[in-house]
Amino acid sequence: MRCVERWREVKAVCASYGARLVVVSKGATDEQIRALVEAGCEDFGENRPQRLRDRARLFPDASWHQIGQVQRNKAKYVAQYASWWHSAAEAEIAEEIGRRRKAPLPTLLQINTSGEPHRHGVGWDEAEEAAARLAETPGIKLVGLMGMAPLGVDPRPIFSRLRKLRDSLFGPRGELSMGMSADWRIALEEGATIVRVGSAIFAEDT
Ligand SMILES: *Cc1c(COP(=O)(O)O)cnc(C)c1O
Image (cartoon, protein in one colour):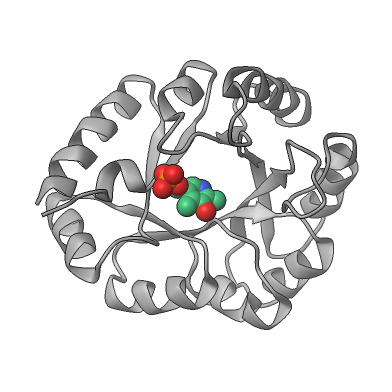
């Protein structure tokens, strides 16, 4: 399958930067995921917690990354099935997830880089306070930041700002999840430790 070839290409570039590739499978079929698992792919991301649960049950040996907003009544799926949570923002949801965990969940604070109210994440100015609260939440292991560059703008200054914020809150060894199909190479140049790539791997597969 083409997706296996594309995954190998993206993965090789990520490896040259020492970064982790999360394959975003929300637009993929189970057959595509199976082919990737058989090729050795270990990290997948889903934005909907129920989908993450279903696929984590189908492919329990892979690590499943929750990358989209979580409603309170779906917190249990993230607590039970996620290996990583990229999209933490509201303290109440983090508490809801954390109190169901045995082992602390590696978690990234999501920054709303554009500041638009319909976008998920905390504002730049709220990040320090939100990080301090998450760091104290039982069952949550805060390890870094996640962010997205808004469509239609140059992503590089956004990624650079995210990296500086990561440095100031976590130091240079903190995790930084940024970069998607359109901008993952730029994100790697700007210091991403994790990129989340979907359509560039799965588009027009045959
Ligand atoms: C869908 C999604 C991605 C991957 O997007 P592509 O453009 O398909 O690579 C990455 N991160 C999040 C949060 C997403 O929802």
